[in-house]
Image (cartoon, rainbow, N blue to C red; front, side, top):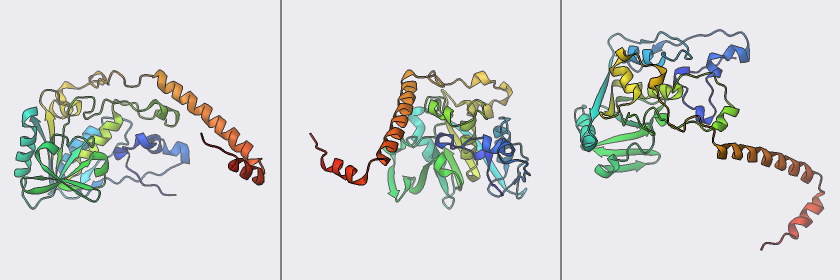
Length: 287
């Protein structure tokens, strides 16, 4: 058996993906030989070094030494603060500075991160793809999750702010996930860090990260102020994060009880003769 995967881009925990499948692979499948793909064919320095350092701060990630396929390839990473009242103007100016023959992605942590753009610019939907017309150019908007595996010459990452629905998101996972997933990654915002890594590495030429100058994301601070040596306490979670909600506990209990009842009903109905089952259906009345 040969398995291929990239733990640095494991961003689907909400749907059941577990980091243990990467960093504890041999515990599940026995003695394993690991072959690392350490050449990237999309982007170059300094983004290679900056993104690698960022993702590997989480020691749960498999350590790698990523190199660009050519020393001549250059990919920049820039951070642009904005005033809220000038948000759309800032985006328009950035797009105007990009050569017209280059492709551009607008990426958001959430599907509603384009909210303010919708009041200013014309939007176009083509199948499952969504665009804004900015400066006479058709620019595609995607969520970061949807952008995985894709690339553009330039990427503009929207609203990297410290907020409940910022980047990283301060909304906690559903506690139900703890019943089916391991605790293999306990690093603060480990999943969000991988998602941010995916976002900044979609570009071939330049990634531009936008943030509100009043409350920049902790990820933005990490890049702009590495001398702060941010500790775990810097990644303050939402007040409701990881809280055990009574209503959730009750729902889990009800779900388990309902599952048991359904199993009993299925077993009982399997013992009912077909003729009797048909008779019951004919005698059913609706009020």
